[in-house]
Length: 242
Image 1 (cartoon, rainbow, N blue to C red):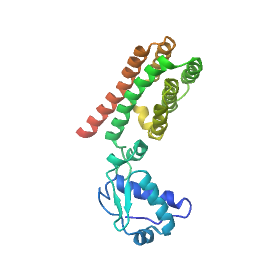
Image 2 (tube, one colour):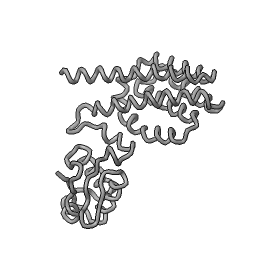
Image 3 (tube, helix red, strand yellow):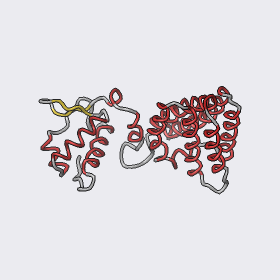
Image 4 (tube, rainbow, N blue to C red):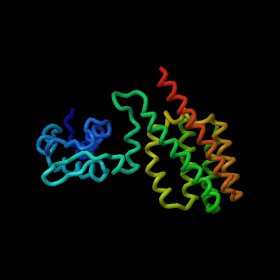
């Protein structure tokens, strides 16, 4: 089950291995990890590095260590945070299609988040916020950029909306979601509308924000982001029927 860990970034590699085993269900909720001495031997690491890794897993809400009971796996859906999302997306085993159910949840969250960000950006954004968004729209308007780069600019446009929304929690949330989107940009690009539609969407939203039209901005964002969910759901139906 385990593979030896190399010396560089020892604790980080231990975390990656154990986190993957837990998220894939190799260790179920309530299961105990092997005793510290045995686990360190199997991984080929010293016990100090292992303890550091276990503390990181505790911080992530994946395990809990108790004196006399060892380290047990927690129900991470009850104890972990949104930072786990990017680790739940990869395929369960040996490559293949990313976890479509989790991707659907990411896009569903993006739809809610996007429409609220757009509404608040229109209501609260200032001139500097508008100029920052305008600069992204100008970059995205370059017809020579590929769909992957356009997706990233589309995401940055929504980061700009979040900044304009003036909500600290929303800023932290989008920072946490960034790896989940950008690490799978080529995959997500399949569910983005055609480039012309993306560019028009940016221009329409920018106009609503300039007009301080919060409800209009929210509706524009919602309609646009809904299309991505519908395309992914169509893909999931195709996978199920195959």
